[in-house]
Length: 430
Image (cartoon, rainbow, N blue to C red; front, side):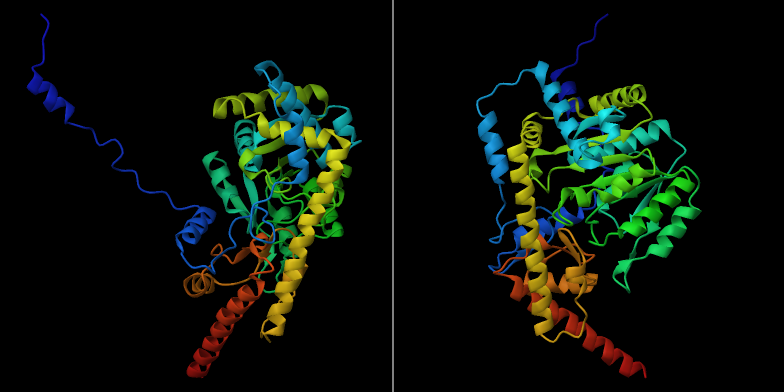
């Protein structure tokens, strides 16, 4: 016998909702997103955003490189069918790995690598983290202290346990090399180590070539797997080959390594999410097997990545004239950053700052790891409308000819007042 609900009963059922999401709390804000939101909410005409690590010109505006404009013109009106998007992706991967491992590298020429297109550097790291979890579930990842904050999120969500290794020394404002080597030696054999090959984020402190050789040697002794996150090739020295030197050292020592690449920064293609993940293998057969696993992981995560950005990158990298233009534009971007570093340091020194600011020009890349405390960072935002991450990381692309003196004066004020407060407290204690 069939039962029919009355309209009253149906209304009563429809108003009875299960509390599916009542237990869900707001997630902590991403450090960079939080800085950007605070900046946009500020109505001050003097506000400065020093949080986002994307290149800006000397007017603080986003940039479209000339090589990108030319690539856009070349592909304008072209129609790419589903059938050849894979070929476009394959070409981009082929050209990308040459940037990392060398134009004439044996691993490239012999196909001893697995390479896939990824959603920028973040996507490349996430793919590798999932690959690590699947095929080395007992392993952990060692991350430099400090590192890009999202590294922790990526490996956590892949359910790979993470541990920090020593990297930056806050007193010397340089590399804590001896402690770093001790951590490599003391880690269980066969651990995974994430390394920044150049322009380390957030510190801007890179090992010397001799230090890289020692790091490579110790990793080889312990049979560790080195995974490089290369987001800033070209932004350390202006020379793409020189910025890949750390990876080449590991190649010379016959490591099998992994590398995440991003073109968000050095081609200023932040919104296009173009990246590459490559993993070196013993031979081409092993490379094909690893590639198939990476493709399966990517398929489950997001299907296939967009084709437009990767077409821009592959067009630039495969055309000698466009590639040469890109290399020159990378040098020009770095020149502006270096000029702002020098100007900021000189401005602070001209204010008779009691602190040593030599690390501004000693560090490399897009970021200046200032050593400002969370309280000083908060004071800069509150009193001077200057926004940066709580750890005091300054994106130098946000520093311009028009605001550098204002920034220097603000930093001088908050560091001077903090120093005076410390003196008063010491005198009271005495």
